[in-house]
Length: 236
Image (cartoon, rainbow, N blue to C red; front, side, top):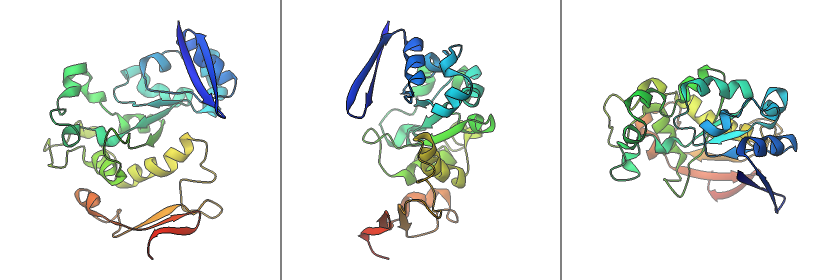
């Protein structure tokens, strides 16, 4: 038996059931399930509450979708689960000393093709959301965008990119940090893109991130920060 605790409007709600049953009850009651696990959550897809339109409407979220099973790569789209990644942790040599070989050590070489499988999940129709995982790693999302595109540490290791076939474009990475994250939180109607009718929450950078080399992304400076249409930092 596993108890799942959810915080809703400041109140604590606990389901003291087996994990799949607890998740099913939470989804049934209209609660978005967000857990840091792959196998247990996606493996509970036989439960009605985690399937079909109900699941897709709830958008359950799998945090740290770092090495899902091969079968689960396609199941994100099937059950409407959001694959949440923290791309700064891709080959985290520059975040934690000596961590560059952690994935091979923990999962073995046979599973490495699925390490941070952002491209595979996107191509299978799954929804992607990015976050920083601060304070575990650096808060700067430009570092994460660079990692998602190049799959390399700041000192450009490994030279050919770490599991390079899973790399995505700058445009795709920016979307995952913005509109993808808003979609995961059911807030895409109001946030996530610069569009009429949405909150004017945005930053002004010192250069165009879509036109610079990926390796130069972390050098861009934030010149201004605007929240709900009001300048709160910097100048225009």
